[in-house]
Image 1 (tube, rainbow, N blue to C red):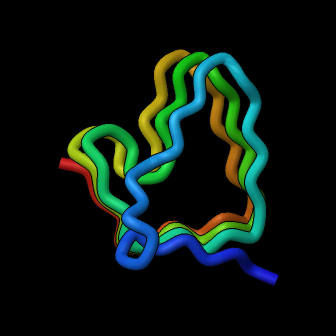
Image 2 (image 1 turned 180 degrees about the vertical axis):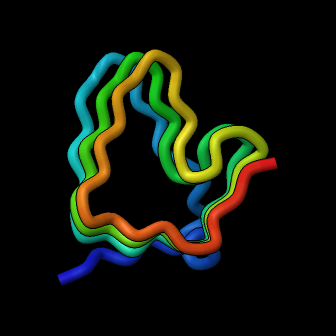
Length: 85
């Protein structure tokens, strides 16, 4: 089962993590907008995502994710129509 997070319905901007490990799987995240990382803002953190779909998310910096000294791993994740300026 896929979790759905929509910027249009949830007023979602981004998740900010500092000094932690983040695990995410089987999400559909669409239409999110933020200044830095439309979905994830990572500061000295690790992200592991499996099987999620990221569609039409945008940020001034970072697109789907903004990363400061972090490690990101995506396995079978889909990126479609995301953007950064």
